[in-house]
Amino acid sequence: MTDALQVWTDNTLMAVIEHEGRDDQWRLRYAPAWLANPQAFPLSPALPLGRAPDEHASATIKRFIEHLLPEGRALDVAVAYKGLTKSNVFGLIRALGAETAGALQFTGDATATPADGPKQREIPLSELAERVAQREQLPLNVWDGQVRMSVAGLQDKLVVFIDTPLAEGGRLWLVDGQRMASTHILKPDTGNPKTPHLAVNEHFCMSLARRMGLPVADVDLLRTPHPVLVVRRFDRAMASAHTPVQVQRLHIIDACQACDLPVSYKYERNLGNAAEVRHIRDGMSLEKLFACADLSGNKASTRLAMLRWALFQFLIGNSDAHGKNFSFFVRPGGLLEPTPWYDLVSVLQYDGFDTELAMAWGDVFEHEAVSPFALADFATRCRIDRKLLRREGQRLAKLAEPAAMAQALAADYEGDERAFAQGIASFVAKQAKRLAQLVEDAAHIKAEYL
Image (cartoon, rainbow, N blue to C red; front, side, top):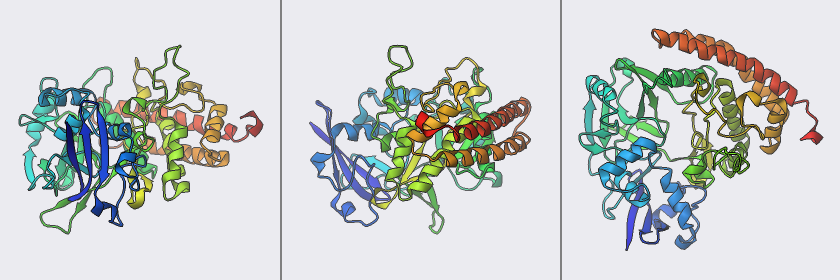
């Protein structure tokens, strides 16, 4: 039996996805009106507009959909509440697809657009505090007995609509409907003693990028009284001219989707680092990431954005910067444009974790082992001029130390959070000195040695 899902964007039918369950075969048909629209864009570079329906690979369609689903516990909860299995990708996107990352909505109704009218349900801070405290017993993505879509990733998250800035009395809402969508992501502190102050850690790193003039999502800390990181979604835009307020969804894809890689390939060593498989590196790599610049409208600025992103991960010690942590807007015609940055965490602040780099510098997967040769090797593979590498590395290093020290003194942090923030700042200062020397030495390595 073949089932179908309608794919909508901004109240417009974009495509139909058909699925034959027994053989797990997928088929994509873009709507004729969408193909005729001068503002049309494809789902991803691997699913272009110009192909006939049978020319889209079934596995590619499925991979694209899998990236829209939650991971970890949020997926376990969805499976349990919806009576589905993890392997039932079609059933999961049918059940959860009204609010995905980016612009897309999925429905099983061929005659109507998603959700007739907007629905809002306020979350008082007292209720949020109670739910954060109880999230081990009642998952954060379950409200009023219903499972809500959660953006990809392993941390507990809740997507909400916030009408005005929290500092100005903004309130939190669960929303449904074509013209209403979440505008922010709530990420409560884990409370895990192995990862203390995780919300503060991410807030610090995101705020540091902002202080350094780098493109990053807006963040805030909400106290319930436990810290909750509030991230403004860059795939949403407020249409303030409308009354009531409307939220425009913007289409984005992550680097794995851009490269047509499965979720399990978000790390370069896709089979792990055991001795017998560590040489297999078919997953997402910096080389694959930088190759995506060829799909953008401005290749030079895109490659520069990628270089700054990679160097910033080094500065903060984020060993978990993987293929789903860099995303692109998909513009008309399918051209890619880097989004603001997100999920910036200094993983190296925590002991007892595997800190192998998600993507290697050249052939080096250990942070402490990164050398001038590794950076020069990276630059060669990714077609980055080593003079540019030196210039950007030293520029970011110069900015990082004073910005980190200033952020550590910010009024956002309380109690022992201040000492933790100061620890990250000291780490960044050391990394800045190290990076400045590494890129200097990398620029002088002879080309014939690479």
